[in-house]
Length: 155
Image 1: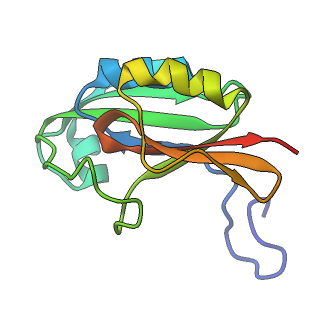
Image 2: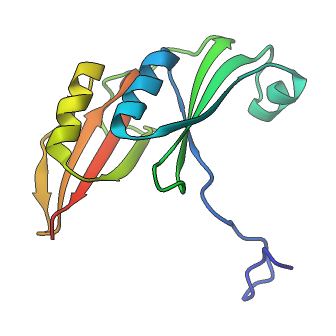
């Protein structure tokens, strides 16, 4: 079997396909991540019994936008639920909140990226910090309170 761990004979993960984030304003989220450098791969409206069964909800109608990283290896699925409506979360929850969604991107020219994201609502959670003499790191809040971490290699 091709997708089994040779040590155990059990099935294995092939790759991380995507990370999904639920947002309340899909156009704003697409603009934010496009400004960060992700490319829109495709969009769809999903609503049928198969979707209901997959996500464990009834009457699902959702718009989905798949954004791809420039290297083609990572994807971010942005999802706007029309029905049932999404329960309110805390868009200011601290990064150590159980279940908090955070996605990290390796970037070049951190200062330029931060300047471009601020008009899209990005706010630093803490500070932009030199880390381990090799990176500059920061957490910022993006659409729907999503925490976006950025890492710029410096050494």
